[in-house]
Image 1 (spheres, one colour):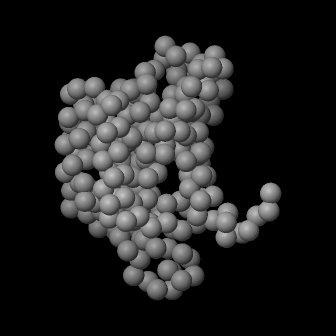
Image 2 (cartoon, rainbow, N blue to C red; image 1 turned 45 degrees about the vertical axis):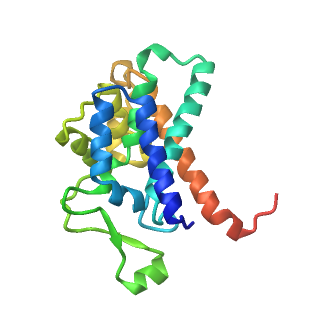
Length: 220
């Protein structure tokens, strides 16, 4: 997918409007300050480095985040309709976690996480449009997301922290201790992390379908 310059700006402004409409002060202003600080980077970032994953193109990050927020809100309605305990988290917490679940992909103050792949063989054979910037100290995406929020003075609740940390579900080995416990007292105390994981999975799958399924010429 290719976005025009106007579409990149429109998508970025949609992201800011999500903050305006769903996040309360003082975090609303703090988040907007952070997002404006890195506006040019955020606006053109991909969501991943490889075509086979999802949204590996300029503007892919913002497009993905908007979709995850929308999927989260819709799935939240389904969970609540089916009897989910709505008292264990707030809609603001869900939106905040969805907005910032991949925030670590922006990198740090000096360096962005994804830079153009310069190895032509890897571009041609592995479809790696981007590569990881090795000038960055290694952190997992969830850890860097939480670090960026914390280092910019943006507070987050336990629900938000756990949701951001667990948004990849069991695709991330580090999450097993949270998600594979057989002891009731060790299980997450809220369903918010499950909703965000399902929303991220849904958004990523839809993005994959948009990029690939028409190329396979699947007949229905």
